[in-house]
Image (cartoon, rainbow, N blue to C red; front, side, top):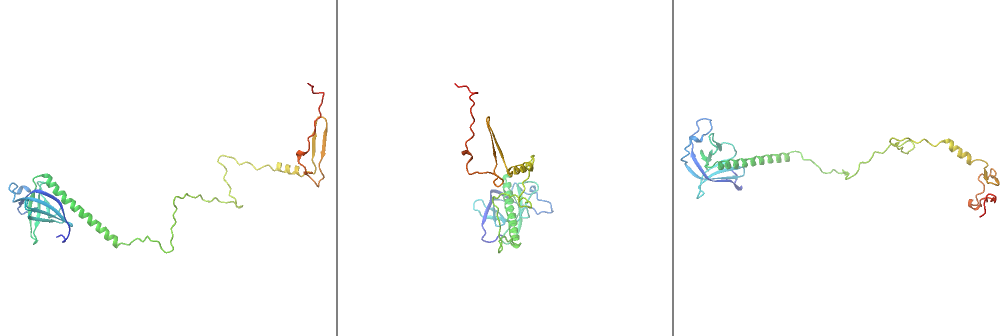
Length: 258
């Protein structure tokens, strides 16, 4: 029986149900409703299905007073407490019990096929819930007895988070001088180094011991010789702009006066 003090819920109520006395089953074959006296039921009333804990109770009560006629506790379905008949879907066999533990088998039937369907579904839903509760309790027991995962930090342990960071490129290998060499551009050619001939030519020109500057005009030639070897570049005390440019004499023979 269910434990005392548990809440009792109502699963289904059907106002019309008939009860029949059934003959003892002589063999292992299933019950047949055709063997009952279906036209003359032995009792009529209402059926109320309740649940207290994991046990369902099928109660046959008087329609007016609500007095209990018989009760069938159901601890599993399908099972011995409720059996179907082989020749109809509206009739069932119940094993009823009294407070003293005595039991008997009776037949019940519904006038409407929909009432029989609701009766069947109410019992199926209840024991489906019971099965889920058993699986949840087993899972909880296994979780409590199994090893627990310790996710706490140990002493001195740290963690590094990289949130929104970009992937860093690997450092490029450096040459022996310590400077990185850039790769050549794709499809391009490396320009050759400047010619040493032109560089030597410029150096030789700057280290010459003398310079010769010739200013050619139409009427006169001026030759200026550079300073001695001790002063290769001459006197730069005055700006080049302060020396007036040589004047070009006018040839009156080539110009026409207007």
